[in-house]
Length: 573
Image 1 (cartoon, rainbow, N blue to C red):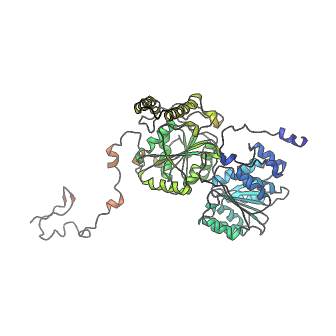
Image 2 (cartoon, rainbow, N blue to C red):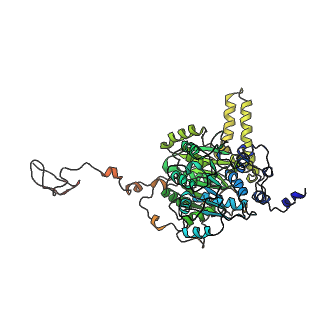
Image 3 (cartoon, rainbow, N blue to C red):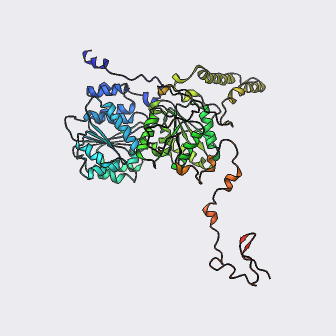
């Protein structure tokens, strides 16, 4: 056992005791040491908290180490990133100073996250990782590439820019990985990616990872991949650990319903999705007014602001994040256990990526969709495409479906058991008289009404609730007092609570349906709204181009320039 001495010196993180689903646990029983990886890499793997490979890692790592092309399809949140980072780092020779691998991702946030995984796993290996995305200065990247860089992580546009200028030399890079390949091969990116491949050597290895594989990926495979090894770990598309519900609401009830969910659910951290950048900002302001801490992030913000929000949210500074679909792909924040679709997505792919933000790495999560009358067909279509069932939201949601057992208190553990006992009791007593069953139901009613959704109540009063150090044992979310604005943030930083940007303070187009706390909207709110443009377009008048009163009908006569009906022409016979 002498060769195992290095294990004793490892600085292992605290063990994560949360239960995991079969997406992650149904393995063949391999160990990371079975792949004959370098000891420095194994040290990084164990210190990052990895114990044994997940199913996608078991399939991908040994094949990737042989240098064969890979086409891997696996669910979000099952350890895809490590499945390509581990073999990539293993094959890098740190004695050479040239670029040896490119990891291509579609979004800036995912690039930062992937680069961080590379740095964490390879911290003992002396490998230099560089991340480059649009939104950062080109000069810094050029200076950085003048030094030693072994692995480049980035987004397609910037990488092609560096390669075409001759700044980044990929002629010795034998590994080319595409994460979220379906997005990278969409019409906006595919010409860039195909151009990029021409800068790589002929004997390169291409690895594609994605949750969905549309036809464009198959066409790319036939054109560029050589006898790829195909991995498919997708029995059903949605994550097993995520319980999905929908609540049928009117547009104007959404904020009130969200307020009720906040007060009833035991939220660790939540991500709330909207379909437009304007609605993201308005909803973030509304949540702040309700007394909950809230950040927002969308594509029209400065990159440095987005990075700051992402970093602080991941570190538990704030419980809630409102964002557009910018953050749907691959973003991994373990403490998120609730995702709320404030606006229902338009297609199944977006829905799948959104709900994959909870239930990361086989843990438990909850996805709640607020459905309006117009969304009902979309809901049915997405259920059919994904082969999943989205249930109507019950009056009481069992906390064991989405809260780690360590964070449940005794009362919460006992309550669902009580309900189960009542159900079995009913089954045993079905032959008894109908009236006895009615009496039992009446006894249960007071318990269920205590947590009924949605409950028409006043907004809760803000209370101060400090966040614990470990994100897995956060208490139920309570409305929090306004947090002091951080001094180190740039001015006009999109972070709540803080001063709202001046252009939105008295916004004329503020959606009236957002002005909702459970009380009816005053009629003045509607009267002050501008008339829709289609109602303003009236049929052209035959007298439009003539001076007022120039033609006064058939009989001529007296003119009334401004009668009670407004400007008009009145004829008197």
